[in-house]
Image 1 (cartoon, rainbow, N blue to C red):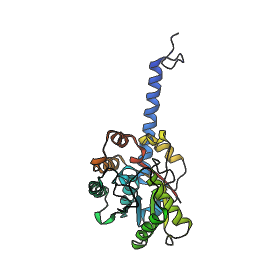
Image 2 (cartoon, rainbow, N blue to C red):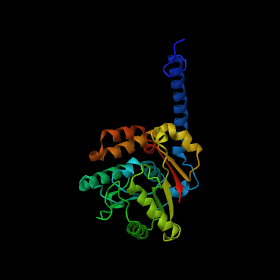
Image 3 (cartoon, rainbow, N blue to C red):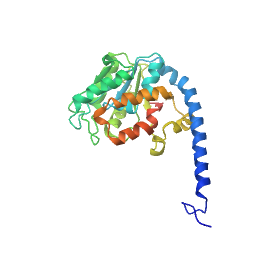
Image 4 (tube, rainbow, N blue to C red):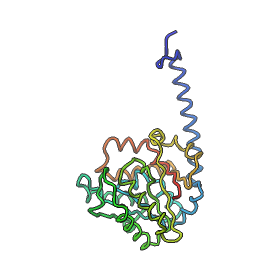
Length: 263
């Protein structure tokens, strides 16, 4: 008998049909879970986050849409007014002024007014994937913003930084320092965005069932309409829309799902 494509002796067509059926079943289950958890976010910190004076701490213009849109839209859906503190102008290719404007446009689509969007444009916090930002300097900027705005919830990257970008990881390091040294105001909590493996990262909505099964302190899932809203926000970053980011917009779970853990 002739071997199939994989040399297992399996007929090609039945295997392809089986795979297609499995994908459709998973997709149907993911859509049902998506509707449920979009209406009622899960996790011990989800309800608390909904009523918080929340700050989403990012490294570059476009992080807010590329990684944190589910959190920002879920907080807005719950009646909150989250703010964004972006710790660089994204000037790696000398596009800082353009990217600041793109950030404001993106945040506006995510329901965040320009008055709630701050960019830290400091020469010692450069947009550079190989530069780890100074922890003390960064922590000082972040702490001042938290205190000045009575923030009681901060959301940012975890130790993996989602993409491994050194600037992302620096934000986590600064927040971990503030938390471990008990420098944060009383009652201010920190949620960090879970970094997942490459396979899960590009499963899009098919990662919903696994995200629902695995433990997290807050799980935010967007509806289909909100996901398109997040993509529109990402498209505001026209200077960054290379082909691979367009692929990212279609397949990344972070355009649909944010699973977070308390620091």
